[in-house]
Image (cartoon, rainbow, N blue to C red; front, side, top):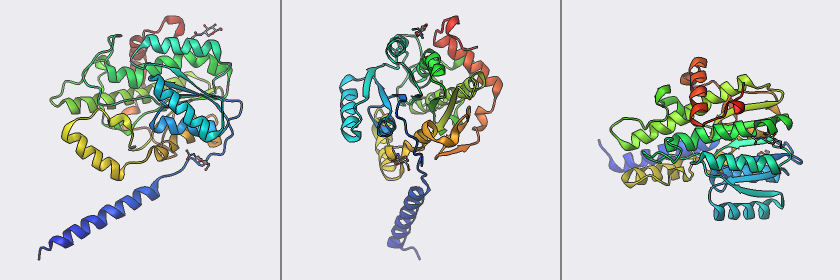
Length: 325
Ligand SMILES: *[C@@H]1O[C@H](CO)[C@@H](O)[C@H](O)[C@H]1NC(C)=O
Ligand SMILES: *[C@@H]1O[C@H](CO)[C@@H](O)[C@H](O)[C@H]1NC(C)=O
C-alpha cells in the first residue's frame, strides 16, 4: 500500500537523522596554543571561515593582519574582532587577489612594516567567477584561488624563515579530487558544455594546484623552520556561492542552509592546522575535519607537482631571484 504521509514521514526522519549525524561528526580544533607575540596574516578574512580564523587568532593574543580586498568590509571585520576579543592588535591591509601587482604591493608593505610573520593562512578563494581573464592575462579563478597565494607565499617566505618555526596554511578543497588537470592548460577555462560545470572544474583545478604546490613547497623547506599544509574545510555555507545564478542558486541554497557547516564549524581545521602543538614539524600534509588524511589520489603525483610548480612560477611572473630553490 502506498501511503503518502508515511513517505513524507520517512523522508523527514532521514533528513533529521542525517542532520544530527553530520553535526555530531564535526570535530573541533581542540588547541589551546597561545599566540601572544606572534603575527598572523589571514587572506579573505572579512567574512566566512577567514573571519572566524582571524577572530580565533586574535582571541589567542596574536597580532592579526586581515588581508582583504574591500576597505569597508575589512574595517568592519577589524572593528568586530577587536570588540569581541578586546585585542587591539588587529589591523587590515588591502590586497586584491585578481592582481599580481596588488599582491606584490601588499607583500612589500608587510616586508617593510612587520617584524615577523608566524602564520600565513592562504584562505582567500572564490567560485563562480566565470570565463574571465584578469589584467594579468590569467584565468580569474586560477589566479584568485592559487596563483596569487603562490606569489604571496614566495614573497613572504624570507620573513617567515626568520620567524621560525612558522606555518603556512593553504585552504584547499575536496573539489580537487574531481579535477581534470592538464598542466599546459591550467590557465585556460575548461572547454565543457555547461558554464556552471566549467566553473566548477576550474575551481577544482585551482584547488588541486594549491595542494600539489603545498607538497612541492614542503619538499623544498626545512620543516623545523617553516611548515606548509593544506586542508579541506568541509562543505561550508559561505559567500563563495554568492555569484551563482538562477535555479542552481535556489537549490544550492536550500541544501546549503540545511546541511552545510557554519563558518565557525568550517574554520576548525584551519585553526587546528595553524595552531595545534600536535603538528610541530608536520609539513606537506592534507587535513580534513581536524585530522590528517591521505592525499587525494590525483594529488599523489610528485612529477605532476613539479610541473604545476614550474607552471605556477611562470604564471605568477616570479623573478629568478624570487624562486625557491
Ligand atoms: C578552538 O579550540 C579551543 C579549545 O577547545 C576553543 O577554546 C576555541 O573556541 C576553538 N575555536 C573556535 C573558533 O571554535
Ligand atoms: C624584504 O626586505 C628585506 C630587507 O629589508 C629585503 O632584503 C628583501 O629583498 C625584501 N623582500 C621582498 C620580497 O620585498
